[in-house]
Image 1 (cartoon, one colour):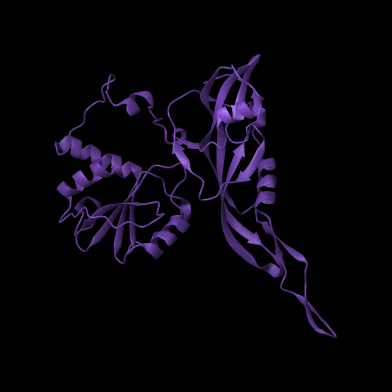
Image 2 (tube, helix red, strand yellow):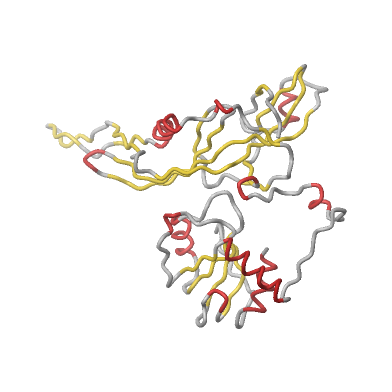
Length: 312
C-alpha cells in the first residue's frame, strides 16, 4: 500500500519527497514529506506523511503520545487503514491529522475515476504463488491471528504419536480492549490500558503484551467454539476486574522506638469496571485438526486437545 500512496502523492501533493525517516518500533510507516497535500486540506507548511497498516486494534491515544515523543518536530499526516479509538478525540489538529480508512478509499477511488490511477483485477491463475496459495481475509476482523507457541512435529514427537493426519485451521477467539481507572487506597487512582485475550477453548482470559506478534493469516478453515464457551457480560466484567487488579507495597509506616518501620502490607488497586471502556475484536488462534481414532483440535497456544465441532 505504501507504493500506491507514494505514487498518488507524487501526483496530487506539492514537492513530495519519498525519503524516509524511520522510527524504531513505531506502528506508523514513513511515506515521505510534502509542502502541501491539498486533498486533505493541507495547503502550506512541511508535512511528514505516515502509513498505519491494517491491524485488528484501533489507533489509541497512548500510541499517538509515544509517536509524538519520537517523531521529528512538525505536522504529521497519518494515512490509516485502522480505525481510531474514541480516546483520541479531540486530536490536536496542530500536530496530527488522521485520514480514516473510508477517506482513503474515497481518495483512491477518485484517482481511479479521474484516470490518475489504473485499476485491474488480479487474475485467478496468477503466477504469484503467495497470492494464489495464501489469499487473506478481506474483512478487517478476520485477517489477524496470534502466533503459535507450539510446533506440531515437536508436539507429536514428545508424545510418541506418529502416523496421524493433520490440517491447519484457525480457532476463533476475542481480544478485549480495556481502558479505565485503577483505584487504590485513600482515593488515589491511576489510568491504565490492557489488551486481554478471551480463549473460549481453554475458557481462560490472559493479558496480551504489546510485544505479542499479530500475523496475517492465510484463508484456511476456521472453527467457532460452542456458544456456551463464551463468557457472559457479567462473568466477563468480574474476570477482567480480577485479571487487571494489582497489589502494591504500601507507603505507610509505623513509628517505633528504633525509628520508622515501613509497612510490608500490600495494597489492592482495583479497576472501576462500571466506568471502564470495554470493547472486543475478532481474533484467531492457530491450530490443527488431527485424527487420533477420532477428530481432535490441537490448540496452537497451549498444546491441548479439544473435541471437534462444526467447521466453517
